[in-house]
Image 1 (spheres, one colour):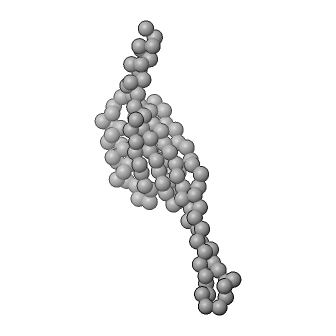
Image 2 (cartoon, rainbow, N blue to C red):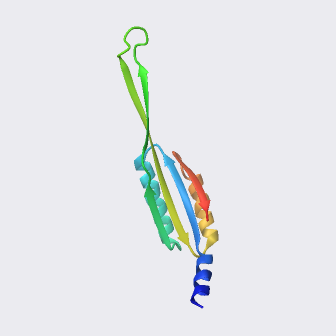
Image 3 (cartoon, one colour):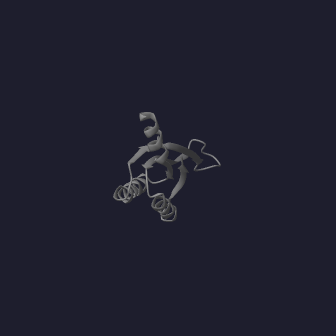
Length: 116
C-alpha cells in the first residue's frame, strides 16, 4: 500500500534541468538569483543550483612576428557553466511559461532546458 502511494507521488513530480553557459560570472549569478526568486514565489518544491568548474582557454600571439620570437602576448577566455535543477508537482503551464520567459530574457547566457 505504501509503495503505491509513493509511486503516485513520484509520477506527479516534474524535474527540470537548466544548463547555463556564460562568459561573465557576475551576470550568471545575478541571472540565477533572479530565476530563483521568480520560481520560489511560485509553486516550486525544490530549487538547486550547482556551479561547474571554469574552463579557461589561453591564446598566445606573437607581438612582433619578424624578429623577436620571445616577444609574446597571452590572452584568455573564461567560460562559466552552471546547472539548475527544479522539482515541481503542479502548475505545469506556469513552469512552461517561465521557462519560455527565461529563454527570451537572456542576453549573454546560453540556455539548454531538459525536462525529465
